[in-house]
Image (cartoon, rainbow, N blue to C red):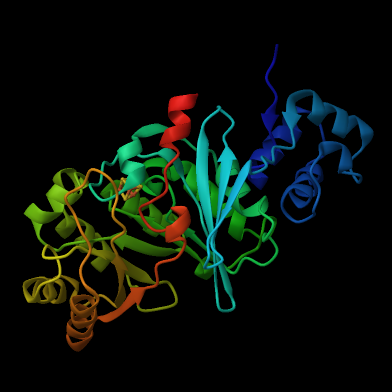
Length: 343
Ligand code: SF4
């Protein structure tokens, strides 16, 4: 039995190729893209401006491809966490974070993650598979807030540069005129700094970049993030310095603050040296404790003075508000490990 593949997640180029294969006129591809990404339908049969023959041809081989969330958790602060099944029987989580006049969706790019960062629940889950562009965009298209979303961050489960082809394709669908037509300035892709992926991302994508930095010192970073062994931070920073981030496209650095580990004047001094010449922002993040790690968060007074010290050095630094902690939707807490065991 032939397995039907989803149309949702295909780029205009891929749809054109498909139409050529099926002997359909080229303009049909644009019509299909319109039904997939602009109009609010859920089935191929509803693509009413396509000929009956075209719809039948598509239905023989494809599904529309939307996947509904199967669970929703709601935080006391209004953050929502959605659980989606994937095409291959796995599960991923997506967070929707309302704040003032913004609604930010934090999407996953992989099921679990290979990178093994010490402070991260997804890292503890291990890697169970890649997401397709369709599964990434589905996390935006198929939640109740879909028409109110103002920002998208690729900061959910997984390392986006370890699934770069599909991540780039998903950003194309979100930003193209034939797709969601969002500004790339409303999208931020976050990475721990896999250098070949970083180089490609900077060249091929217009979205903002966020790098998980966490400490400027090699030994310490290596203990927190094994990626430091393959791609030391100095290399990551050198690549970023080759590009001009002083225009509309922004680079920021994520920094989880751990008590007594990376919150000292020594760290402030080294961060100032390392980031000199880059127009950037540092986002300080409170650590949310996870089981089985020796790490703990810093106290509020130290967090504030660390922030002030960095600002005094001329690095724009803010403290990110923790959202959705009570439903495990906050930074570093996403995991579908329990469900992996059951499947
Ligand atoms: S922090 Fe990101 S890269 Fe590191 S283990 Fe977690 S999901 Fe993977």
